[in-house]
Length: 202
View (cartoon, helix red, strand yellow):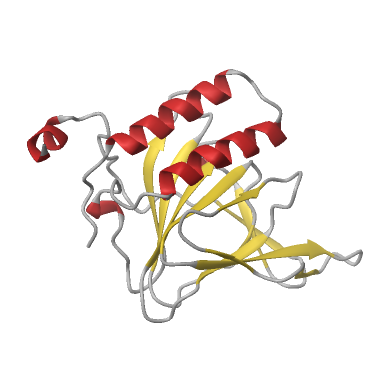
């Protein structure tokens, strides 16, 4: 298991993203510049606390790492057990997905005139250091799965809201939807500002 030797990386990312959002950029600029910040974060696999990298044999886990005090964005670690996948779903806010460990496949969907959904293009495979963007403007309906049937994968997701409290939808192939609020797998947030463990490791 990779140890969290450099928790300051997450703190630096959160500070830089908050500063970017403070400038009220257009969405395209936000996704581009925010994507670069996230790519820098996930290019190092030495900062995620072990407690927020634990898989569950039944379903993928969504651990909240940080939520902005004004609910402008949230940062979540998605931990995929072997072979686990999401249903087809949306987000209804902008999002960035960065691959930290392992790999995942993301399949986008488009709506036909009759309302049904069909895969749009080939699945995108994310490997460590790579980032994908979603939003209602550029494409927001997809299905994600662990690329491996024999190992855990972890991706870091950033959303333009407190995503665990957003009312959004899962979809059937015929286009019918069911609203849901995802919540989070953890009830207690990590204290990323606590320097005590970091100083002990120096």
